[in-house]
Amino acid sequence: MAVNHKRKAIWGWAFYDWANSAFATTVMAGFFPVFFTQFWSAGADPNITNARLGFGNAAASLLVAAFAPFLGAMADSGGSRKRFLALFTTVGVAATATLFWLPQGQWAGAIMIYGLGIIGFSGAIIFYDALLPLVARREDLDRVSALGYAAGYLGGGLLFLLNVIMTQKPHWFGLANAAAAVQWSFLTVAVWWGLFSLATFGWVSEPAVPPLTGAGHTWRRAWRQLLTTLRHVRDRKPVFLFLLAYWFYIDGVDTIIRMAVAYGLSLGFAAADLITALLLVQFVGFPAALLFGRLGQRWGVKRSLFLALGVYMGITVWGTVMHARWEFFGIALAVAMVQGGIQALSRSYYARLIPEGHSAEFFGLYNMMGKFAAIIGPALMGTVGLAAKHILATHAPSPEAAPGIANLASRISIASVMLLFIIGAALLARVKPQASAPAIPPEGNAAREE
Image (cartoon, rainbow, N blue to C red; front, side):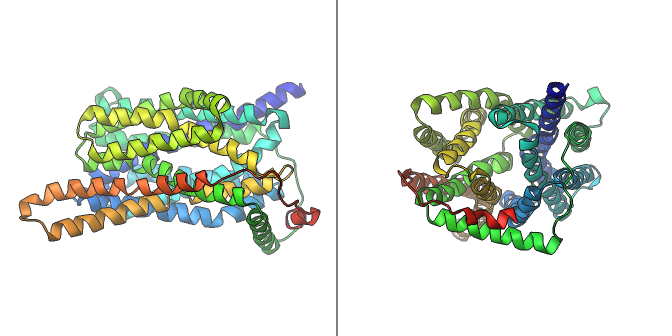
């Protein structure tokens, strides 16, 4: 009975990834950029639309990142993981459902509601991750974590496939047109996310922990924990360099995920083709991540990371010069081959750098850096695109050149993401694992263990 109960808790935990991945695929990567451009920001210059979307993504990500260490400290205190998971899930589900009713032309409202959705999605993940040690034994952590990723790929992909069919064949579902299908897709994501999350809340149990401190003390403890970890990182140059490298290159990865559809639209590609390409990424990504993991074991993790970064640099260059429809599908396939791999191998390589017995402390900082990702890239794309358009327009020979100028400015904006991969690769090249590192004194964890 104990084994069955444990298995049920594991499946309940994995179901949350199945549930919330619908937001990542259908909303974040898929339909929101398209609908924002064609419905809520209809008629606006493509570079202005990309800038609005980029700044909105950056602002929401920055807000989550700023509070991540404090939310993590609350999760570490125990006893409140499910409560905070439910709170952020409710925020995300409510925001996603609200997109269904938002009228055309309300681009500012769309960005605000979308930002709330990102806050709910990203904030919930902090507490979802914190539940993993409660449902899995230490020797099963990798397997159970992989089960969550697999469930996310499959669940998010299946609903996304249904949503794509809805937009391509709206009359099959009794809908007037593709726009109505997209609006209903937002609502299906909210229902899917909320409904399947119930398995997590019902099947995963959390030990009751009496409150030991007030909220003010919890926030002070979070600050002390963060400062203590930063001092430990300062004494370990490889860890410090890798975190910087990870911050830059994973920002580039997340930027491509979030901005690919908006960029494709600005170049004139059909929305249906862009969505189909994302669907390709979803279903190819999972087996490709497993194959990339084996490559890391056979060829070396760091060498495999450089391969992935090289592919992303090639993707960025290809994106600046592509013109044909098939090229976007080719780029989508290339992204699918390395997206899961670079995320998985980054985590395993970092695990080799940190001291034994302090994984929770150091991975807290790693996850915080991950939350800061997708701040620089989208803002960089938006700024460079607007600046390029202004400079090119100043030297334009005639007003008739405006469409060509907008197209060129969009291409220059995506080229700017290359900077993130170059900086990340240069920093990664300087990471040399230390033969020995200063020991962490027992009192180093005092802030956490109070």
